[in-house]
Image (cartoon, rainbow, N blue to C red; front, side, top):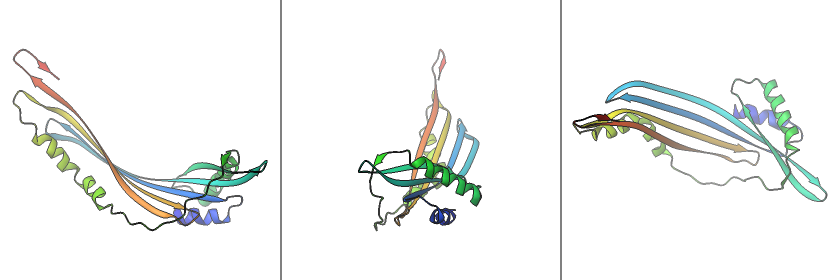
Length: 184
């Protein structure tokens, strides 16, 4: 899809620069009741965001306008072309002081550890329940939400970089029972 966008952009008029962001988001969700896995869900979504830039001068000052649009992976070439034309038109109404586009640099970042935690979500659940050892109290239910993002950024100046990151959210409800009553 990125190559398809680059090809369409190369034929577009009135564009002074562009940036494409590709996000691949993988989610894993685990739902436990006490120590038993009740539900397990997963999804993988790919999104593309395109920013087009237009340069213009007004009263001796230079400006750079921009507009961002979401490109759906199912869009055909003609629809993409129309969306780009609309964004290009919109960009001329944004009046930011001119700024340069980011140029490429060479820097290698190791992202291997980011994916590993995504593969180990079950061991995270085990770690929580390993601490569930009290007779009077227990973990009533828990939810694990793990989000893994792979982001690739490409621009008209030759930048082509990517990175990965994870986000983990854990929600749990505890119950404690004493002689008189049960409290959550």
